Amino acid sequence: MIVLADGTATNPVLAPRIKSLTEVVGHSMMIHEGGDNHSDHPKPLGGGGARMACGVIK
Image (spheres, rainbow, N blue to C red):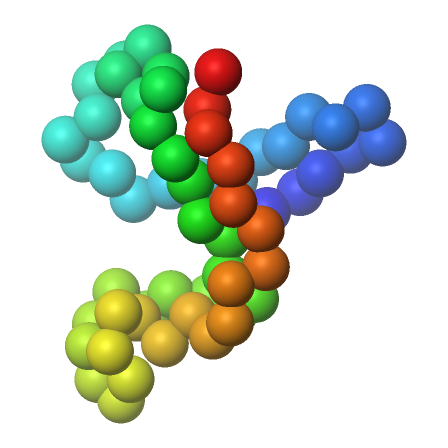
């Protein structure tokens, strides 16, 4: 994830079922300290590590 000084961020997201950004308004997002390997091995839920931040998308 790249976050600029003005607070805007970009990050490629693997979410093939989302067709439009309007679908995620009102939903929450969790950012973990590490990357996700998209597998439950060697650790459950992608092994992304501790939670760093969360919030609701407006």
